[in-house]
Length: 128
Length: 147
Image: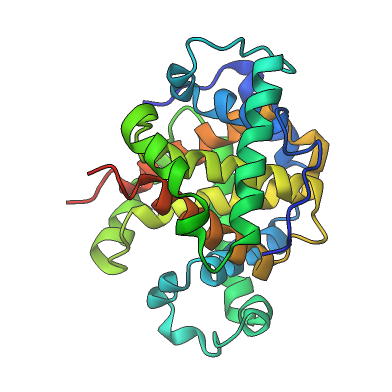
């Protein structure tokens, strides 16, 4: 997929806002966060997620290796129900589409959807 | 039973008023077939679906997309009775077309993404949330008569 650069559009802003607005049940994973738009928690966390995606893109032929530690974290500590990865992926795509309509062609859409679905698989593959 | 507030209805209808149903319909159905190629299983009679450009330019895809989105427009005029509005179409999709209802969710989300790309900033998180509610309601209504 096109290399994501850590634009402001992805870090801490629209993506979690969209996730929490459309799928309020996802807030249950963040009882310890200040979820107000622009909060430091969201900005920091958003940056982490975007950085991890960046790592996956850089190692696109070995995403499993690049995300091995994160995969363990999600399996043993975070235990986010797998359905939520689809919800987050969708909100990422909506955000990218709204910011880069000309670049977000049908082929780019396909590649990104595939990429995010593979990342999601890898992050949940150690669950059991 | 999904319920829309007056504000939500207004948000939906005002955005919908700016949508070119023919273009958006072709775009939505085309993207469904490109991004989720297994959905092509329902469209053997549509001719050339062998590449992204073939699919996006395919006249049958465009015309069917327009039909689908026009029907969405009917839903928008009947937000208080989605199940009733789609009862016959639900039976059709189950008994004649044999479409897995999962596909309604896929198409709904593709439509949301297309609206995001057309409307940019205007497609705020709150506007998106209302549209997610709508596409979920339509998907449920279309699956309601399955047996």
